[in-house]
Amino acid sequence: MGVLDDAERVEPATLGEWSAWLVAHHRQPTGVWLVTAKASTGRQPFDYEAAVVEALRWGWVDSTVRPVDADRTMMWMAPRRRGSVWTRRNKERIARLEAEGRLEPAGQAAVDAAKTSGMWTLMDDVEDLVVPPDLAAALEQHPGAREQFDAFPPSTRKQVLGWIALAKRPATRAARVAKAAEKAAAGEPAR
Image (tube, rainbow, N blue to C red; front, side, top):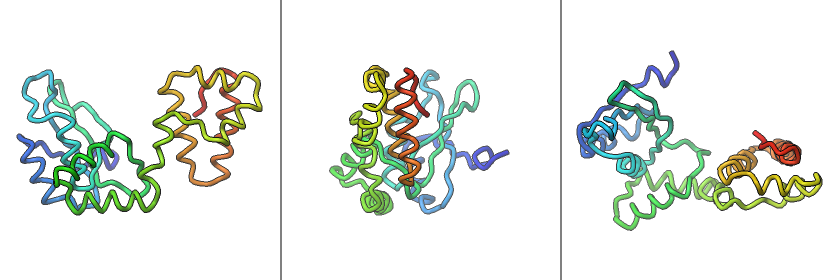
């Protein structure tokens, strides 16, 4: 069994209980499975959006979702790690929390760390489907590659662009750019 399989499960009866759990445990270094009833049961105490907003208040983030049984699912919630990317949707949630005065110091610390490291904005161009200059140049080196790349569905282009953006070393990025251009020329997405 892996770490996630053996992790604690929290099954709050209300959003207030989930919030209270985060107040008491947000400093712990490991995550938990947040267990809730499926919406189809009519017994869901709060929805995905509310759960995620509460987690973000405290510098936590959602991840994997797994079934528990026919009526319940569990979502991995954990402290945001250094180097994790911020989606536009989560940045919008943070802006709303700030405007409402509900962002806790732990949540603000996660935001500040992301802004300092560049992770806050790393995915902005990816989400806007902006082709970076190095990839554009590589696509031009392969006849038809740019047209093929532009014809991929937005989700596929986003996946390729994100894969390139997340390269940690320049050599890794260069290799990913080259592979993306070669694959696009063949009509296949890289990854």
